[in-house]
Amino acid sequence: MAKEFSKNIYNSQRWRKVARAYAESQHYVCERCHNRSFIRNGKLPRFIVHHKRHLSPENVRDDNTVYGWSNLELLCIYCHNTVHGVSLDRECLFDDDGNPIGIVDHI
Ligand SMILES: [Zn+2]
Ligand SMILES: [Zn+2]
Image 1 (tube, rainbow, N blue to C red):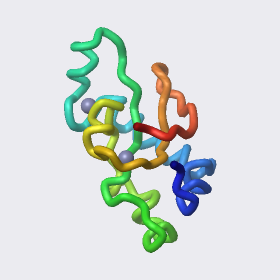
Image 2 (image 1 turned 90 degrees about the vertical axis):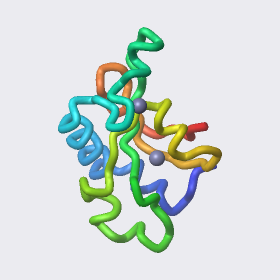
Image 3 (image 1 turned 180 degrees about the vertical axis):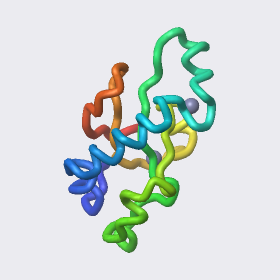
């Protein structure tokens, strides 16, 4: 389920710009597995710009937490699911060409 407090952020132009710039800076390489899953599965994984400190109602107004690169991590969808485990979250997903395709509820 979407968390209401972070919905506006993930839908915002500002977040998409930041997420895109960050993903580009990482050359769309997963920071954890370096796209080993790409080799394993034979197709490019999707990427998510993840917040290391997860957004919460308390920190959602803090620009450094939301938009600061030090709190971001580019993960492929496999690693991202591992990070979150069973928790649900919404973040910015990229298609195979690296274009932000908006928001997903990930599993
Ligand atoms: Zn990965
Ligand atoms: Zn995440």
